[in-house]
Every structure is written in structure tokens, then in C-alpha cells.
Length: 292
Figure 1 (tube, rainbow, N blue to C red):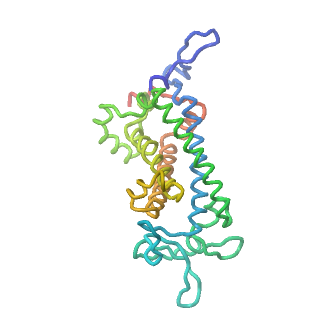
Figure 2: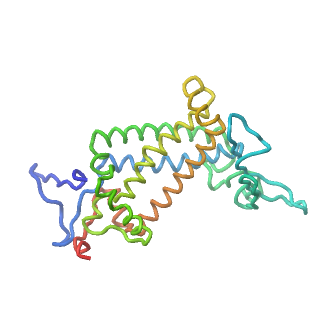
Figure 3: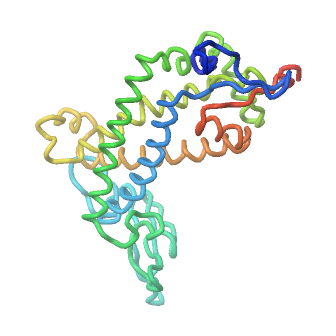
């Protein structure tokens, strides 16, 4: 984090200390410009990819394992069926379990009409059932996501962001138990400790950036018949094209889970300060907190 807490050049080209709000409160430069730009590009890409991906999923709202679709034995499926009174009900199936999800999944209201569709229109991009447009949105932002991810990985390695900010240290590993307990009790780092990522943040970012990100892209490519000659080995490795689609779907919701936890942590640890740091780069440190 050494470079992120760097001093700022003054008008004469010299070096001046970071600005101080008071003797005990100071402002540090926490997130560098490339990190902030790529962070917001990722946020936009993931939002559009989720909405357009659900639009594509609605064309056949079921998941299977293997090379082919076993329509009578899906791992997961959304649809609608008539009950004993002849009324249509939305149903979601997970393995051998069936749940009534009328009004949300399987059967939802669109423009005042009940329609059979996996995910409701407010969750998909575009809202109405429009597979071809959903695919265009998805593929465009998928390539933007890939390009942004490659740029971030290169920057993290070349610009020392990985070494200085993301790689856990020996001290981090020794304190991981304490960090888990503190997060469970909603106790977050204060004072000087808040200037750097804690070990759980580092591990979460590493898993998402270098694990979930590349894997979801590879599974997306593995679903395409045109990639057989290039990624045939990967399709065989995961058990088939339908298996790749299922893994792709699961990883998409893993990103959603990460996003929810990420937003929650921002809110409970000081939303104003955290948002300022990811927009302007500047983060306020209250050194009085070091004494408590």
C-alpha cells in the first residue's frame, strides 16, 4: 500500500505531506486512478452481464450436467404448470425438490399479463423476452470485461498493486482467525489499520479476480460449439457443454453474492469514506481510533 499512501506533488514540483484535516485526522491517497477506473468498468460490466445473461437463460431456463440436455432430469429448472384447479403456477425445481415461485420465477407479470418465463422482466436486459438483443449485450460487455480484466492483471503485476496491496503477508495469515471473528462481530479496522486491505479482503479479491473471473470467461467460451477445436479439452475436463453452462451460471451468482457482501461491508464500515476513496482516491484516517 506504500504507493497508495503516497504524498502529493505541489505546484512547485516538490513534495508535500498528505493534507491534514486536524492534528489527529489526515487524508491519504488510498486507491490509484487506474484501480478506480477499472473498478467502475467492472461494476458496469457485471451488472449488464448478469441482466443479459438471465435474458439468455430464459430462452431455456434449465440446467443439466454432461454433454447433452436430459430434459426429464434437470439439475435446476424454472417453469409453470397447472394445479388441481386448472390455475397456472410458477415452479422452480432443484433436483427432486419443487417450489411454488408464482409471481417471481417461472410465472411472472409483464405489462399486466401473466407470462411463463424463468426470471422476471425487471431482472433481465432487455426487459421483454428478446434473446438476440440479450446475446448482443452479453457478448459486447463480456469482451469489455475480459479486456478490463487483462489490463487490471497486467497493472496489478507491473504496478506492484498485487505485491503491495493484494498478496497476504505472514502477519496477515497469523491474524486470519482474529479477522474472521472481528468481521462476524462487525468490528472493522480503524485508524491506521484501515489504510490497507485486511486479510479477508485480500483473499476475497484474489479469489474473485484471479479465480472466478477467468473461470467464468472460460466456461462461457466452452459453451460455444465454435470453440470445440480450441477448448475441446476444457469441455471434456468439466464433463460436457451443459456442465460448462451450469458452472457458468453458478459462478454468475457467486459474483452476485460477492457484490452483496461487498456493498454490505461498505455500508457498515463507513459508506461516505469508502465511496470517496473509490471515486476520488482519498480516504480519511482518524488517528484517534488507534488509541481505542
